Image (cartoon, rainbow, N blue to C red; front, side, top):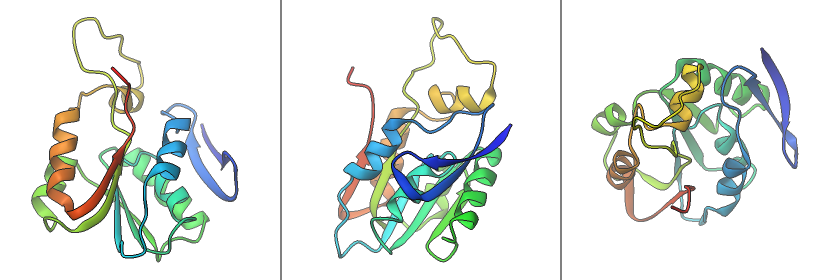
Length: 170
């Protein structure tokens, strides 16, 4: 079921979520607040943006252009609804694409800042997969591995840019 929620601690931001999909977590909120944004930074990219919580929070910290990249169309639709609801169409854009395809079509070294809250769990025979395809893709490396995320970020990030991500300690 689709719902409109407040983003934790932000009175000025609302987000559309679907209770059947993976909802944003405190990790995303912390990442959006942790990443260094400099005055000279002009373009920001959030890899695997999900329903767009990181771009929504980053838009409170900067007026620069923010792009959210997400492979799952259902989550792209939610993110775009949230962007529209919060009147951020001129600052934030959401692109539906596989990161591995996007890096081949995008301009290399075109972003000053890249964030990512990647899937945490490697795929192996011991994994318990959720029934929801959306949750499985968000939690497990079924569509992209951590190594591939880092490779994509390294190609898209400008020299002296910042890459920030959140991941499990192990």
